[in-house]
Length: 290
Image (cartoon, rainbow, N blue to C red; front, side):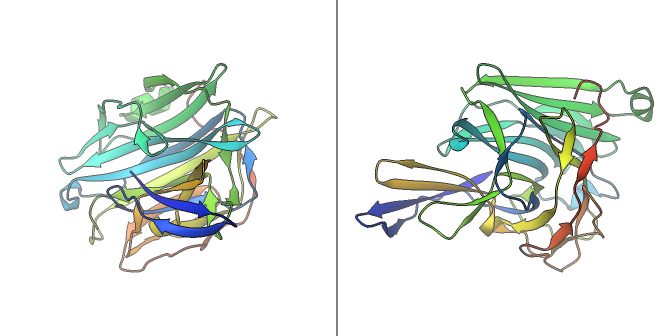
């Protein structure tokens, strides 16, 4: 899910690279293209897999919300949280929340089967509660009846990290020219999927504001080699992290609109900093209590 590089800071901030790389995945996504700020404890997204033939997927196709946490002074804490909705080759869908601290996976949550490629909609929410307890929630609408009555099946994981909040927006990582995108929503796979028979739809990509509304702001695209999402300094070393780490070549979006993306393969690579939308606004995620 992530890739990490280690940089050594020597004397007058002269940087010598010492790579320390974890397994790479192919990734492309969107990020909020505004200056760094803090969410009011919550972020969310919705996803499904329309017009997709699962057999074209080599293993898993992941629709994933990724966000950096902070502990003090709005500085990244080195915690990275992900709400991961994964479609498997057999058509099943699993919920696999993940938390990384300083490059390691902590804790090791167990994936849970929650639906199929035909499920109506999945919502993933990440919540910071008082005291630093992190909640990962999935609201699953497997049938049209569940959707019509707004009665999703709800799955919840929690873990105590001590973080006080979540970040969104961008910031240049200290001593580098690399831009950190603290909140991202995208697609990821261990293998390239060069088939036009898959789609990943994402909407309600939003952070919770101090006015108690869900907000979106202008967004741009990001490929895996540029998907820096958090960093920290320990002693004389600067560590930074990416989502995926490899560009998901051949993947683009079908005519995005405000807070709405449908990813697909058609042989055209969207690349970095393509404008997904330029507007700001509020959304009302469907699940009651989100």
